[in-house]
Length: 241
Image (spheres, rainbow, N blue to C red):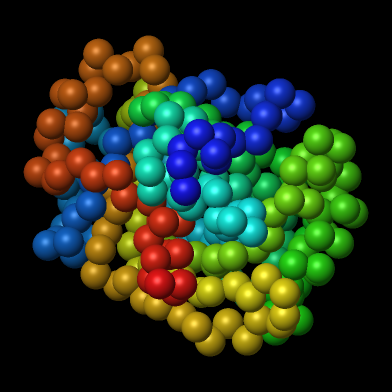
């Protein structure tokens, strides 16, 4: 699929909740999460823990042609990911989910978020159920119209640790124990097509554009390699291909 054929939907009607920021990602395969956390806590920028660790769950949406997936694989200049995100158990009664549209332009990105109604994620969940949830969530019309072109395709959950500098200019997250489920768009979802990735740990260094001059110093302390890792891309390739 060509990049030109898969430009992201116009987002002019969405509420812009964040400015563009950088996210440097590091794929770590040879260290345990506890060893990585020790390195973060020993960083000369003196990262502290602003929030306790928690489980993050992401229900990704895409078009029938998987345009968002192919844009991300191709590294298109403008690309996006659309997901519902919540904390705690991955299935059952889902409380306080957020609709998030992550938009990337080159190396920087921003996130647009909307509150969604609570719902139940079980074997009856499918595209029809998702559309009902979207229609009753009080979203702006432009957002509802966009969601009617998308369907749930992937469920991803993982554990995340949070770290930040005292001035909050730099933030680090440590993600581990990833699990991916294939979501059937048309029928029910027994959630049995599951793939685990217990070994890899993803470290992300996040900062606003104006902090770029200091970013090399912040990133240089970590003995990890920078990667283009995408949980969505990895999950699709694990459970669909």
